[in-house]
Length: 284
Image (tube, rainbow, N blue to C red):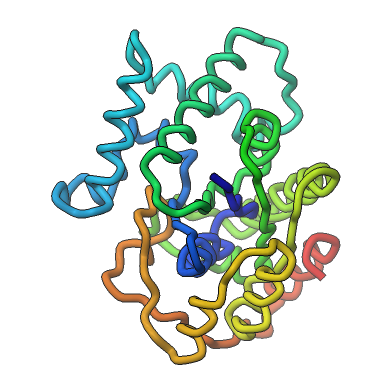
């Protein structure tokens, strides 16, 4: 099995990129797999649709995974351990506590092993985003992992965080800017390390939306994967197939989805100017 891991900040379009890649040849979208531990192995939205293919897919994964642990899985404890190594605060954390890191590594190995046993496709997409998780997976897993670093115009991210009622809590303007800069700074640090041994391609969300054919072709060439099926769907304006994404943005819940090709337009306000200026070193 091969893995395509999407790195980026929240609200940067990682879910739509996950779905697009999952429409390539022999590739399956899996969504934010880091949330498996957080949600006790049950995808939140699909827990209300227990006969859906997505719910049944992950129920089967959880059942088989649980059978591999003779003493069961303490998801609460595992979540605490995972957060030490995967969340942004743990970016510079060393594997000092060998017991915890061994437990974490063992779970990661068994989890992806179970996926490999149940997925027909040779490649899966993990859009967990966290740069720390990217580094841990690269260290732990024996599989070939390729990475996509997706950046979005900071004005779009900050605007998205100003919306109410979305899955992730809204953030005030200043905090959203600090979050954007900090996370993308960590992403750049992680990408620099990953490039030493792995294939990594960096793209912009705005290019993906306004020039999808060109951008997907760049990903196809850089990562040496076959995206011709999704390129054909975009050319013909056809519906995309939505795989069993464990978690992600709300578009994963749609029954039908087409890529909307449209430019991002931001009002000429002082806050938007300042947002762009403060993050110039991250998004040029």
